[in-house]
Length: 445
Image (tube, rainbow, N blue to C red; front, side, top):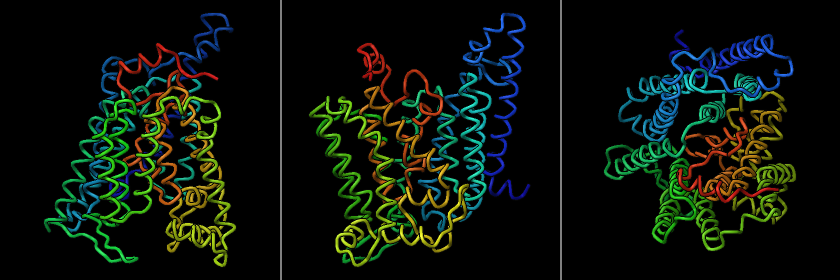
């Protein structure tokens, strides 16, 4: 019990697996008993019926509660990682020691309640979610990677939630948290990390590492873009994004986040000037393959690492030694099909190699194929802002692992469209824009 109070995610993950296993049995019973009252050819039709798990008690109230559970979980998680996880933990140690425990329980309970009691599933969706959760929980038991587990729980809980409304709550919580932490570090209320590395001054602005502050800025930029939408971006939006990129470059000197912010601005400019650039089938196929190509490139460069090769050495320097660190991780860590704890000295920041090592090939395939299918569905639905943001985070994954942080990469929420495969891919667009997109028809193959 003591370990559950201190570190609750393991227990809640077990409850999620057990709850969905019971839900599968309950749904199978509900499906099989009904054809007894009708011809057996109605069995297939029964499997497509969406039902609230464990009966329809308080059906309307549960459906009303569903989006609030998700929004509260996302906002609390944002506050926990962006504020409580800052160097305020040294200023207010009780907040970090006891506050994080309470917040972890609140987030997990909201997500678990949404998944098990406030979501409608049909038979195929229920089978898919149980299989994916079972695999990731098995891997999580071996590698203890909480970011991966939390990402899946947020993706599952996002089903049938108005994601734009949730993001409208989460974005100001994240922006205010980062602003307060940065201002507190500048005014001396909390400590900050500072160094003069590679000839440049670096400041973490109140966080425990420079690159994390860069990831916070990138995550906020993605949320802002998703709320604004690619078609509504004006000159002041690009000016704001450029200011964030300059802050990221001259403040924490976070190379990965700075390059991805520059890539975000460039991609949005292209989409804004040339709206039809994402429609051709070859373009969509190439962008869909991006996570798979990035995985292949990361693996090939790491396995082919040779410090005597001047081209590889220069590229390794540009990527802040990510290639040589990847080679070291691949050659020193054993191969594990179902995941393993990373070694104490394993510093593989490339997410494609990191999850290959600590999560194994099965979980890696689920992650990167999931993102590939997500990009395909976003492009097919014409959700340009969401597609660009997802691709930017996939590029960021070549140097950092924040692609799996649901508080930084909000496109993780959109993976619910891959797991459950609804007719329409969820996005962050306004309701009137959603209707306009579908009244014109989506891009088809």
